[in-house]
Amino acid sequence: MLEVLDGKRGNVDSNTVDKVNILLVDDQPGKLLAYEAMLSELGENLIKASSGREALEHLLKTDITLVLMDVSMPELDGFELAEIIRQHPRYQKTAIIFVSAVHLSDLDRLKGYETGAVDYVSVPVVPELLRAKVAVFAELYRKTREAERLTVELERRVAERTAELEASVARQMELADQLLDADRRKDEFLALLAHELRNPLAPIRNAASIMHMKGLHDPELIWCHEVIERQAKQLTRLVDDLLDVSRITQGKIRLRTEQLDLRHVVQDAVESSRTLIDEMGHELTVEMPDTPLLVRGDPARLTQVVANLLNNAAKYQLENGTIAVQIAHDGTDSVIVVRDRGIGISREAMPRIFDLFAQGERVPDRAAGGLGIGLSLVKQMVELHGGTVRAESSGVGQGSAFVVHIPAPTATTTTTTNGTPDAAHSAEAPRRILVVDDSVDAAESMAMLLRLRGHDVVVAHNGQDALQLAEETPPSVVLLDIGLPGMDGYEVCRRFRASGFDATRIIAMTGYGLEKDRQRATEAGFNVHIVKPVAFADLVKLLAE
Image 1 (cartoon, rainbow, N blue to C red):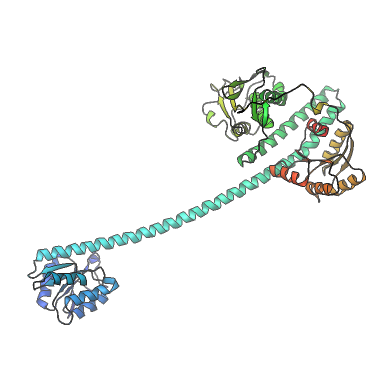
Image 2: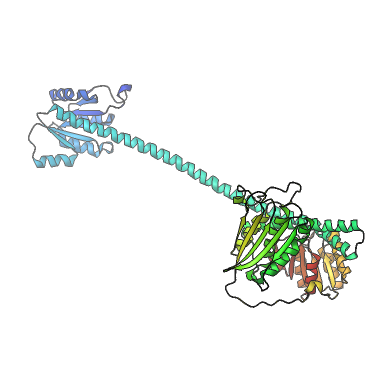
């Protein structure tokens, strides 16, 4: 006999979805009816089987939560049936309650537990006790299934979230690669931009220098010459600043440090900024000690720091203002203070005053110019020297001060300076110079300048002509552009060296100014690498060496 109460597994009413299946197994129909009556109020699905074999058939068709079985049955007794149930993978954890009408010894109970029983009920069965036991196992089963469901759901969500995170990480890595590529392209663009801007700047500055050397007497022409010189210098500085920002952000700035007198740094910076200061009609005062103020640093970069601060002070105040520079020793540091009575710095602008491209308010009646990178360069250059810089201002219209601290050298060494004129002011011996540049204006203007200094100059506009001219009349100095058509300057230099021009001084004059460009120039055999546009006074120094 096989009977199912409340329907079979695949035909369960929607209101019984939370019910569990309980299998009642006994060879006596009366007992099955009694168990049914006792457990019916639990509201679970009660399935009756009159033998062990019938119970097994039902176990194969239906998910059973709990088995309530008699110990003594024909064919398969309770112990044997329990052992068979436990061998099935699906029912290894199914609750089994034995019902026994005879007194069981401890050995009998132990045998039952070994075959898979989880509890015992003795006859006569107490209905309340039986219901309590079955209710506990039914609820435990529901909670276990709910926990399993939640675990599956959690695992699904974890898998989805993991997939999302992996996709996000992959996207972030892709974005990082794109940013690196964009940064590389930006650097390449800046280098190309600098090269393209420097090439026309070189003949402009050369032409201005020729005008100066020829001598001008017409006041209007003199003014035109000064405008050209001033604006060419300004454009050159802007190009250099752009490249410096790129180098610093990549950690490619290399300081050429030496022990130096900070007074000379300030003097060079004042000379560099004098044109702008005078143009604005500002009064400049410089206060510094009579004795050397020694620091260890890169003279060119420290001069750039002070010059940027002076230019900033000149631009951000009305005409006929005042600028004061003070340098002194303070404990273990050397201190530079640049103070002005200009437009000041607002409280809101102060935290970002050293940020890249940050700019204060312009002077109302004058476009101050610049890209907003001067103070950012100051901060980064000072920090490269192990120093600090801070801005001070009482507010808008109250002027400002910039205070730079540079650590003093750990060990003091003696440095001597004298008043002897440098090479730029000494008369250099006439030389035979070969100028190689594919820009006709740049080459011819440079040649004209050098001839005015008494040098014998020949010009070539490509590498092959340069090598041929050198074979005909060997030069003592070659001013060689890098970006030549066909054979570039690096290859031309290598061929010069391979042809026996070991004693010839070969100077790279190029618009390419990155550190890798300098390294390539050195490897190709250049003696010096200088970046266009070259101040003629600096070139004169090189020729006098």
